[in-house]
Amino acid sequence: MKFKNSLLVVTDMDKSVQFYKKVLGLHVIMDFGANKTLTGGLSLQTAETWKDFTGRSDISFGTNNAEVYFEEDNFDTFAEKLEKLDVEYVHSVKEHSWGQRVVRIYDPDRHIIEVGENIKVVCKRFSDSGMTPEQVAERMDVPVKFVKACLR
Image 1 (spheres, rainbow, N blue to C red):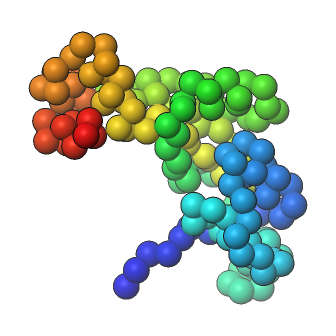
Image 2: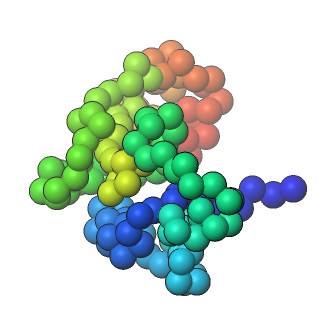
């Protein structure tokens, strides 16, 4: 068994594709009309065909019970870009206790999209501030071996 990708049901394929392209820089790599696979392994499926496939008409949007997670190397640049776009925030940029900065937004169908600072970048940011790998590990509550691997 091998996990292949995640699929989100969308009400307007064109609007969703444009959102993922404009906001996250994703592109369509496979186009089956009612189903499109984007770079990074995210697939979008029209609500109409999803209802047909599943035999269910009770699709719920905006339930806030799951998210699609991305990491960004240039987090500050991404956060600045978001401020210029018309996106709905779940919450603005915040820093988790382990030091990683994240932001959560809604896509057009109110699926939660989290974009986090690449964890290797977090390690490097702490190291560049003068912290030893041991101090970074303690600050982030991760093993020193993990920090050293991130700093290579």
